[in-house]
Image (cartoon, rainbow, N blue to C red; front, side, top):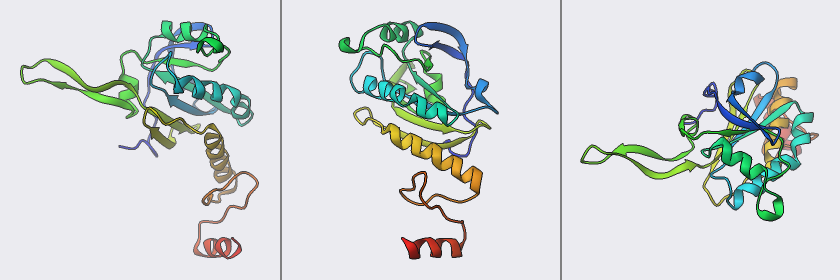
Length: 209
């Protein structure tokens, strides 16, 4: 089920921050009332599509920070594996230089609660606990507002990388809605015309576009 319109699931988990420091109890609660959060899941450390996304978020990090938005990544790897990957240079397939937090969801509970775990636990006919599917996260992306409410989510299958510019566009749209009380039509970008959420407003917008 979608989390849009609901409170983002709470968690406290280990994470690597600033690309080099392990903290034992990282939580998104620290941003409540202060910042929006782009919280994204990726399948695994030391893989192929994942470093392109993680580094792309880092390249755009100043754009998110300028908008008052925190970026946080997560996978079902351990914090030690995160740190090892962060210490690996790009020419060796690593993500050296990434400074935003990477959460370690080794228990897979965070991915489960956000609805991105690519499988589920079940029991065999003999009563043995087993996991069906892939015990890692899909490429889930969540935009969480300052009240801790999820305002946008997308979930991609493993081979499908994200568009980071689209995440920035969605942040801009959310900020526009909150500031001006207007709604943002298809393909809206910052600086383009929005519209009032009325029959007259829609008619006026469509007549000009």
